[in-house]
Amino acid sequence: MLHWVRALIICAALAVVACSSNEPTPARESTPAPPSEVQVRAAAAAPASTRPRIVFLGDSLTAGYGLEVEQSVPSLVQKHLDAEGYKYEVVNAGVSGDTSAGGLRRLEWSLDGNVRILVVELGANDGLRGLPVAEMKQNLKTIVQTAKKRGIGVLLTGMEAPPNYGAAYTSEFRRVFGDLASEERVAFMPFYLYEVAGIPTLNIADGIHPNPAGARIVEANLWRSLKPLVEKQPR
Image (cartoon, rainbow, N blue to C red; front, side, top):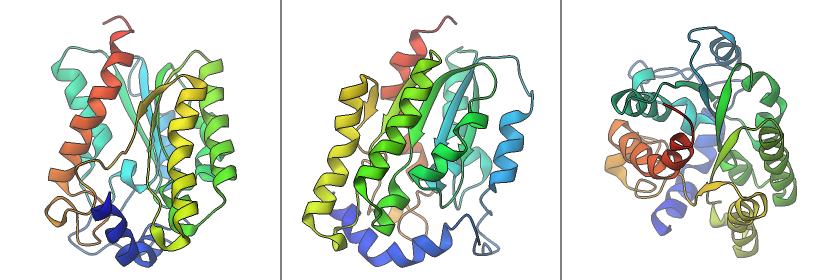
């Protein structure tokens, strides 16, 4: 955790600017541009497959900021599913700069189609901006409850806030995810960037977003939480 919070202190200002979904910073030539909300919506709506869907609702960490499309965590999960014979279509509904409120606003169209599982990776930008923790929890709770009411399995992933807002804020922020997973009885991955955060060799130049090697570690850790949900569905 210490590696993670140190990285956030150094890169918080850069991350907020670089990941803004309203006015995205032009990507450097070596860094692929993250998909816009319009592109994500089009991908979610496209009838690319009749297979049941696993939707990743998230921010730049889901979108794969700084990575090629096939290197993003959702794409790696798709490869994992295919290799093990699971007939799912993975939808990457990650939008760079999104807060929990942004994810909630686009939840309805993100759940279009035959969605069986929803992976919720939101909150990093709430923490970077010091947004109210209670509001974040309510947004996430609404997302989770909406999915559950539709019979969709949910995997909630946890996040850490930078320490510059004080110990009380970071502690409250951290508790939200575990508390919500327990209250709603959904699958839980305590820290999305576990074993990757703050490690220079596993992140791109901004120090926050995983590079291809880091994304593979995130996917491997996430798979352990996702697999039980997948196994509940028929192959």
